[in-house]
Amino acid sequence: RRRARMARRATLEAPRVGATAVKELRERSMAGILDCQKALKETDGDMEKAMEWLKKKGIAKADKKAGNAAVEGNVASYVHFNQKIGVIVEVNSETDFVAINAIFKEFASDVAMQIAANPSVVCVTKDEVPADVQAKERAIEMEKEDLAGKPDEVKAKIVEGRLNKRYQEMSLMGQKWLKDEDKTVQDVLKEKIAKLGENIVIRRFARLTLGEGLEKKEDDFAAGVEKELAKYRA
Image (tube, rainbow, N blue to C red; front, side, top):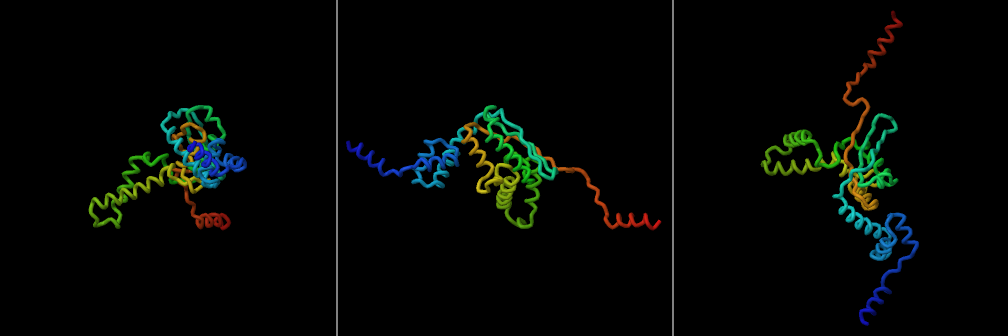
């Protein structure tokens, strides 16, 4: 009887969650009704805190799915308006059902645009930075003047820290998301996994820059003018 009274008291003391608030949170988060109700109760009806609560729960669910095989998916592309930069990216899902989902397609397209906007990005994760690039970057750091005279152990730690930061800048996952700079690409990927209920993998990409690798002839403007004037002098 005492437990029943305590349960009733707890129910009465719990904040009431209105249908309007639940509807708004559901539209913003795409979470289920019961999850939205619980989130609002746990955060005393604070909409922003409820969003954070759902986000944390969503990311936890996403982590559990991260090991599942992803062999379906889409190839998305982005071409800049000046037609001089293009990106093609492969994003995988577990099933073709998710691959045709509008949320998945939009995410894949956004990833392609993200890569196009970050020319320093050369790989998906920092573990994929090519060995030759790592060797070159390490050699450059080891020869920097500010490390001269420092013990080898200290120098190695400083270089390692600098390289980790550099590799993070070179990888896609550590980049700030273009549409929300408070998040990284990794954060948004986890949110999509939680929302769609399947593992999603950004597998590979290629970037094309017009004229890259070609020698561009630099015209001497003054010499060109002189050449044209010479036609009239003859």
